[in-house]
Amino acid sequence: MLSIPGVPQLKRAESHFFSKYAALLDITLRVSDVLFIALAAVVVYRSEFGTAVMDTHYISGLIRTVLLALVIFPAAGLYRSWRGENRLAEIGRLWVAWTGVMVVLLAIAWALKTTDTYSRVAAGAWFIATGALLTFDRLFLRWVLGRVRAAGTDSRRVLLVGGTQAGHRIAAAARSSAWLGLDVVGYISTPFDQVEIAGVTELGDLSTLAANISACAPDQIWIALPMRAEETIQKILHMTLDTPVTVRLVPDFFGYELINHHAAAVAGVPVITLRSSRVEGHAGVWKAIEDRSIALLMLLLLGPLMLLIALCVKLSSAGPVFFKQRRHGLGGREFEVLKFRSMRMHAEAKGEVTQARRDDARVTPLGRFLRSSSLDELPQLINVLRGDMSIVGPRPHAVEHNRQFSEKLQGYMQRHGVKPGMTGLAQIRGFRGETDTTEKMAMRVQCDIQYIKHWSIWVDLKIIFCTPFILLRRTNAY
Image (cartoon, rainbow, N blue to C red; front, side, top):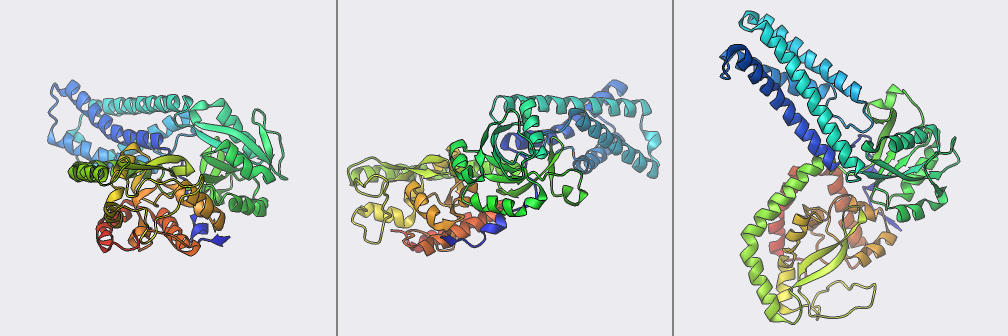
């Protein structure tokens, strides 16, 4: 089996615990903090002075307060993931941070000799009112997120590896607190086990790990093993290399400052991300906004052209306008991709998909133009709006091709750590069209892995900008 360069570098220490819903609530929380600070100031000012039109000194003080909050609140950890976070600890940290803002604000006013221009009664009332509003806001958003997770909407299916004390604590916390959004579907026993995890089914040992991953379809694999089990951890990482799921390490020790700056805490247990995608949490929200905005704009601009192509496809040969095919998407889940039909209707043996080749007799004259110009891909804008695909990402391959190449290329399925795209890094680098050799596919997948590793909005925009120039060359597409 060939190995794809760059796959080992997917292991990353930093933690990305925000889901899509948690990231949206986090953004809401950051915006609402600013709004509540301003709202409390206006209400208190009106109550004290009988007008909502604030004096210049109070406006400048409010602006300084907001700027200080934008710096101090994140530094105090007010926007980190709430999974396993104690409510009282969160509220306590909020009041400490808000008090810090007011102390710095008073220090600035003292230094500028402007303390006499502010009402002490109004300042005290503002401090208490704002703190109360921020407290209520956090408790309410926690309740909303808890309801979402308890309903299973934002739940993560976790396959636990190791019956250790750390694994026991994680499983117990997930079972007792549904709002954590962690559903431990079972655990795999190892030679390092210390306890039997109550309430969680033992699914077998390490020899059955691959079979249980297929059967349970977990979103995440949590390795709860001591640090001395390095060889076993490496073995598990190797066994899961072709499984597009997040892998986290729950080291079986507590209180080691050496690694805490690389870990998040869930139920008091340090959890380190070993392998995941950059496009999670806030990044996933921004990419979703990018995808749908661009897809909607392109559909509005190219709608007339798509209607004309649809008419030409219908008149040029018998058969439907759209070609539909099952392909693997995010996490390896299947979806139905849309394309304008470019071939004559034909039948293939079950389980076989023959790639189009140069001078392929199945391709219609119109289809040859559509394929060389990639206009046959335009219906995938609908897939983007549905949420099955992105504008930029690894190109989706037929399910049968995935099965073939995943057996030949180690790490091949890691390309499904993000949504498939209409264009991608591999396409602008010339790896477009037929992949008739394993080496060609390895080069394409290497580009996909590099894209996942270095993703950013700017990378997407660069690829989108370069794509039309690549399409004009009409190379390797027939």
